[in-house]
Image (cartoon, rainbow, N blue to C red; front, side):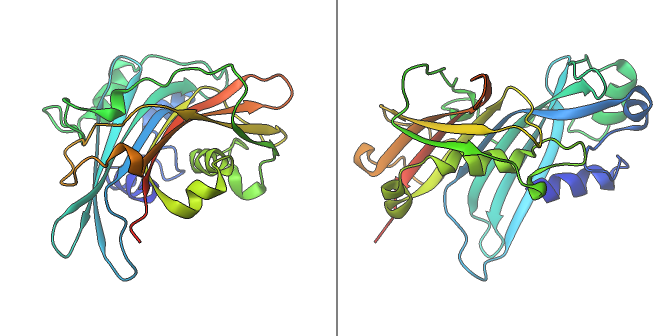
Length: 253
C-alpha cells in the first residue's frame, strides 16, 4: 500500500523522495507525517493471487489530508481489504504542525476527488473508534526494542511500517499460532529516532468488534475473535510513541 501511495504521488508530479511534497512545501520546508492508520484485511491473498489496489487522497481539515485504499482480488473483483490514513503537515526544521496554506491546497487537492469518498462507509465504521490510554500494568510486553538501520527513513526517524512490527512483538505466541490479524489501528504520537530504546506493551481488550465496514464477510463470533490495546513507549522516560488496537480472528483449520 505504501508503494502504491508513493507511486500515485509521483504520477501527479509530487516529489520522488518519499515525502510526496509539492513545490511550495519544499520551498517552505514542509512535509507530511502520518497521524493515524487503520487497516482491515477481510481475506488474505494466497500464493499466486494478483491483488489490485486503488488509492486516492483528499482534504481532511485545515492541517491535514487523508489517503484511502481498497484492495481487490483481481480475478473476481472481490474486496479483500480496506485502509485509511490521516496525515498532517509538519515543519521539517521545527517539527511543529502547520496549517495547509492555500498555495499548498491548490497544488495538492487538484488531484483529489471533487466529492468526498471514503474507503470505509461512515456507518458502522471501526476506523473512527478511539483508542483509550492504559496506565495499568500490561499483560504482555517486549522491552528494549532498538531501531535497525533498515527501520529508518532518510531523516533518521523510524518509519511507519516498523511500528507495526514492534506492536506485534508483544502479542502472545498462542494468538500468533491460532489467529490471524484482521484489523490494526495505530495513532502516531511522537517520533522515534535511531538511538531510542522502545518498550512494546499489549493489553487484553474485552468486548466484541462488531463493525463490518462494508465487508462481504460477516463479523466473527466473539469466541473466535480477540482484541488487544497496544502502547509503544520510550524505555527511559515512559513517554508514549504510539497507541494502537488490533483485532484477531481465529484461523480456519
